[in-house]
Length: 199
Length: 199
Image (cartoon, helix red, strand yellow):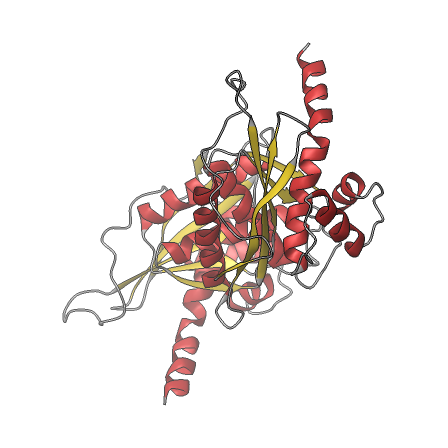
């Protein structure tokens, strides 16, 4: 079941590729989809950055994909896979950002989170998106400025960056948007590194 | 990359369903595919049981699916997903048996094992197979007779049950075949329980 989040889900319009550079006089747009994996609730958030002008970042769509805890796990995984594929084909992001897992965190749900992250990563590659993973600490560092930030601080900062005055709930939605914002924040550095390595 | 194991990989012939019972005078065959999830090496083993006669159990195909450790993890997951889908469509098992994971085991590789198990379970449901999970201890209990059996004891017992005098290597192949054998060993009990519950 897909449940729309605080930002209404809508198609982002035609996908633009960064590869060839934008045609002169047009606004280049980058679409980044954050995915916060989870079997009961998988958050997603699509963020667009317009490269021309001040580089505004806008939340285009966000929500959660839910599966029924009363159904068997294999069936829920297949449902999740289908919903992720449908989401990717609908919003056609340039880049998909998935939370990188660490073994120690959230022992109780770690296995199903790992299973869903596997589905999300494979689906993103199959949809020909660039795929990036960040740890929770990297997201906090990029969004709030330090790795020990609380969940509430991250949520507030993401809402501020995206110009949303509404509460970002459920938290899975805020986490997904934070992943996308984190990627856009660290992108200039990554490009500089890539250029330096290519030289 | 798919690498054939000790038993040559071959198509198992037309799939027979248990649902309607076998036509009179024919041999009903059940195909069970065991999958031992892993990202560098995912073992699989297809076992067939002929219901008529003494109920012989035969290994039909076995091998490993490997992905290149030098490639990025998301790409390897997508490769693994494609290979699993191809395998399922080729051998068309009635039932797929995947090792059920526990959080504590093999900390170093637990996340990628979880990711691949998610892909295997979702692919099996999508291929309309019955899907069953057993823990490593349940497999040892069913195949050797006690849950604390060593890997070598399991390998030897699986080779004996399947009438193979060759070494079952790599161990991922033996583990996958053990999962399938475990399912066939516990199937009569499961059926009796289902019947009792339905009554």
